[in-house]
Image 1 (cartoon, rainbow, N blue to C red):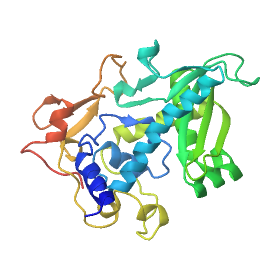
Image 2 (cartoon, rainbow, N blue to C red):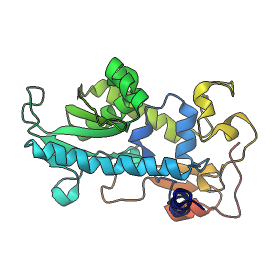
Image 3 (cartoon, rainbow, N blue to C red):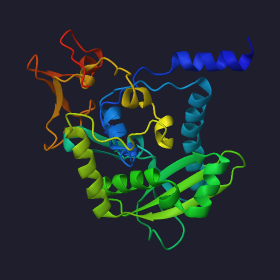
Length: 283
């Protein structure tokens, strides 16, 4: 067996089983398909990624450290987390909606930032995606990334952001200053609230299984055909998120509170993942 195949198989076997994120993430709220966001939040389908794709994800994560080093090399102050005196994350809607940013920077060159803290968002792109970004700009080319920045900036009270991207083919860099629109931020919070409170699947982006975006979606079989959801509390008709309109405990690390109407008990994240004998799938 070739070395590359052995490596990919090892990565696939080691992938985290905790793909079921405890909260609705800010990084995906800009998705156009409401049903896809709801399926993600409700843990309907385990994503299936081959080793090569998992390595691509890993490369994107490692690139963040390169961006930080490059910014610091030109005299920019960069904070990436609590170990550096700041927690650049947010929790809204009772902890059911949350996210963490790549970092924040102060002392970025130019007049756009005026020495104030600005949100940092780092991304990697293949050549085709990068060229489209150069041609159209962030909002038109990558609306999901744009909305991700908007909700992060709105939630954290940061008025501006720096989007920094690299082309993986030839190491070209792209940067764009993004103004945070609190009106759009509020709209995205309302969108998240709708998704969290929805008891049944929202409308899909297209009724056609041949629709381009649908063919690449992890939920394709479940949404358009007879695929069954993963068995867990969030795909069960008896469970529901509660406390969406409550204040969030900043120390809570398990997302928002879930409740089982069949047993009359609250559910921990581990219990949600496990499910029980009362399971009845939401269809």
